[in-house]
Amino acid sequence: MRIAICDDEKEICELLYGSVKRQCPEASICCYSSGAKLLIAEYAPDILFLDIQMEQKNGMEVARELRQRGEKTILIFVTALEEYVFSAFDVGAFHYLVKPFSEEKFASVLDRAVSQYQENLEPAPKAGRCFMILSNGAHRKVDLDELVYAEVYNRKVTLHLRNGDLEYYGKLSELEKQAGEDFFRSHRSYLVHMKYVVKYNASMIWLLSGAAHLAKKNYPAFVKAYLKYNQRQVNGGWE
Image 1: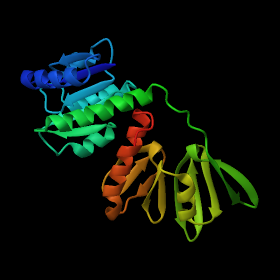
Image 2 (image 1 turned 180 degrees about the vertical axis):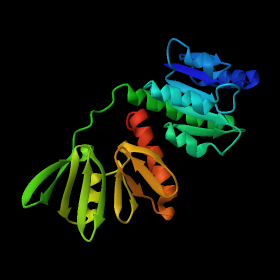
Image 3 (image 1 turned 180 degrees about the horizontal axis):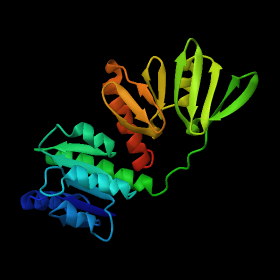
Image 4 (image 1 turned 135 degrees about the horizontal axis):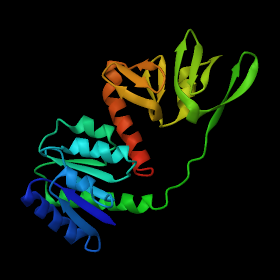
């Protein structure tokens, strides 16, 4: 198991290094004084404690580059500011430690990260899921993984799939129950698949194809659900 600490403050690196060493003596531990040095390392860490406020390339930029490469590093931000917490959701952060924090808090987060790493070694395969609809007089089987989002108007549900649209009469609430935790009811008329979310703000969600309204009252819940979704994808099923 490779654990890395990336912080441009030498004292913080040394402090975290000592804490990790005491808790995980058998782990390979590396310290990086900049994001650039971390990104050119031969191997990506399995667990990374990453400062956000660094010169040249900040922690968010480093995290995005790691995700763009497809790295599944368990990412723990370490920062003195809380304002970046929502940005952390977008890169599938495992945790967000705000300085100063206690040794007990750090140990608890590291312990859970190590447990997650061990669970990720043998991730359980995901089975495809389908549901049936009656569309244009014929029964159709729809693969949930292909559903980008759904919307309802006058009892007619429109399924926006990757390869086209389907319509049927029904209730969006019933589809929501079948769809499961990878979907979110962003608005009374919309159900979105978080797999296909491209970007969002407090009132809209843009997807791979199309866009859905996001009720302002649902925004905090959506952000939390989207964070959990990203964590499941990056960390092999963690919730």
